Amino acid sequence: MADDADIRAGQCHCGTVRFEVTLSDGLNSARRCTCSYCRMLGAVAVSAELGGIRFLQGEDALTSYRFNSGVAQHFFCARCGIYTHHQRRSNPNQYGVNVACLDGVSPFDFAQVPVVDGVNHPKDTNAPARLAGTLRFVPAE
Picture (cartoon, rainbow, N blue to C red):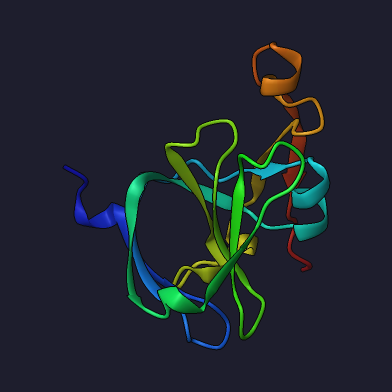
C-alpha cells in the first residue's frame, strides 16, 4: 500500500480535468525522453501503475494521441490542450504523469532529470533501455 506522500492531486491548465494519482516511487521516477513526440512535448514525467489515476472530474474531456507502433497513448485535455499523462510503450501497465500537472510541483523543482533514449527504444532494438543524458536546471542567481 502506498503511503500518503505518494498520492498527489493534479489537473490540466484550465481545470477541466482533475485527478488524483498514486505515484509508484514518489517523484524519484522523474525522467524525460528523446523520442520524437516527447522531444517536442518537453515534459518531465513520473510513474504510476495502470490503475493509479483516479479522475475526479473531466475524464470525458480527455482525448488521446498515438503514433508509430500505436502502443503508447498520450492523453491531453481537449479544452486547453495540456498533456496530463500517457500509457507507456516500454511498460503498458504503467503511466507517465506530467509533473507540471501535479499540484505544488514544477519541472524546475528538479536540479537534474535523467533523459532516456526513446529514439533507440528497447522495443525496437531488443536492447536494454539506456540513458541518453541528463537535463540540468541551474537557477539564475
